[in-house]
Structure formats: C-alpha cells, structure tokens
Image (cartoon, rainbow, N blue to C red):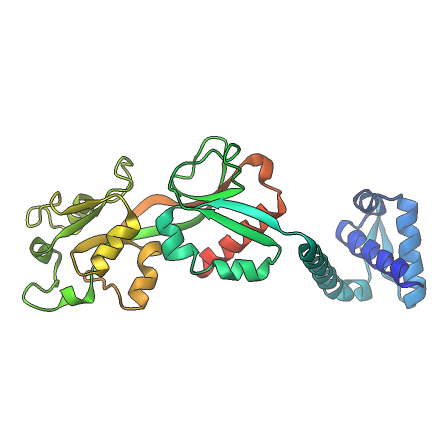
Length: 304
C-alpha cells in the first residue's frame, strides 16, 4: 500500500480499537462504516495478521486479537508524537499568545521559577503574565486563564484545585541566635511582627492572632503590634532582611527555606481552607492552551 493509505488504515485501527465499533469510529473519522471496514481489512491483508475477531454473546461485537492488543500502545504513542510534531511545525509559522493573570507573590515565589518548563514543553505558546493583583474581567481584559487564591468559587469561572498552604512563622536565620534568640513562641515578644494584610478582609486567612492562639501564646505576645504590609512577597522579603518575623505560607516560602534565606523557628503550623486554583471561563475549558496549561500546572503542583 502507499504510505498515505497505510497511515489512514493505522489511524482507523487505533480509533476502532478505542470504540470497538465501526459505526462509532466512522463518526469520529467522518467517514462511512463501510470505509472503516475496508481500511481495517486492507491493513489485515497487508500485514497478514488478524486485528479483530467477532464474539457473539446475544449481540455481535468487535474484540481485539492478542496481536492487535499488543501493538496498540506503541501505535497510540506514535500518533501522539506525530500530533506533537505537527503542532511544532505550525508553531514555526505562527505562535499563540496565552494571557494569564496570577497573584504577584505567587508569580514571584512559585510560578516564575517553573514557567520555563512549560515553555520548553509548549514552544508554540507565548505566555503573558499579569501580576496586577486586580480581579480582571476575563472577557474584557482578554484573559485566557488565571490563578487565584480563595475558596474556589468565583462567578462565571471554572476552578481547578492546585495547592493548599500551611501557615507558620519564618524569619532570618540570624534571629535564631543572640540575646533574644527565637526558641519558643513566647520569644516573639522580643521581635517585630510583620503582618501580611493582603487578604485581611477574608476571615479564613490566618493572622498572627489566630496562630498565637493555636500555639497557646495568648497573653505573652501582643498580636496587633508590628508592621502591616499589603503585599505577601514584600512581607517575606522584610523577614529575609532580618527586620522581624512574618507568617509564611508553604507555597511562598518553600524555596527561601530550602536555600537558607529563611528559617522556621517553631514547628507549630496553622492550616487554612483557602487554596490556589486555576480558573478559566466555561467557554475556554477545551481551548488547547488552557488544557495544556492546566495539565502542566496540576503536574507541577503534585510534584511540589
């Protein structure tokens, strides 16, 4: 057989194998069931191998032979590679701009350290990231997808869970030494408290008051004093500079802890029902860029 016909026959075999029906396969391939049957019989004749046989148990249905079943995984992987190659060829001619809105602190502390892996995997997307912290109108601002922190419910948007944090004090390693070394939560009375008030209107967001209450330190430390900063990344940077102690959250401080810029003086942590979610409109849920970004984010979040 000529190569194009052979490829069509292999594609027909892959589709029929998934549906075990000429009728359903024909609908997916946009041809007639007779055409599908002709391609399958031609492929079997060329290969000299039976790919299907019919089993009768009340109704007649297609069943893969052992040879057909054994060849299927490699064939499907080959079509996946072929599809990826075609996409890359398209990318050489034109690229797709993909607009994403992301909280500034999350972009700074988590996403931007990883985004190059998405770009390597999807060369044909030019990603543009908005970190304004405004709740943008996806239609008016031409946003394809976003990452938001909250309870997972936003009007007119679909949300997919990504990450949930724990909250705990973090500080410069220098504050673990000296006259007022941080050894117990009560020692916080000798240090400046840095308050992240970027979500102070959200009742579920942990505060110094709630953390101290959970840690059993209710009177020894004044939970209201200190410096209040309306930016999570800036609050963390202030702590890195050695100017006080802030409540860090897992996602935003993990790298600074690993690389020694921050230290965690106490084991006590507070959970939070709020989380990071990928959001997009219902109309864009099947858009290739949104699907690709969602799958990549879920994989990254799981590995984190």
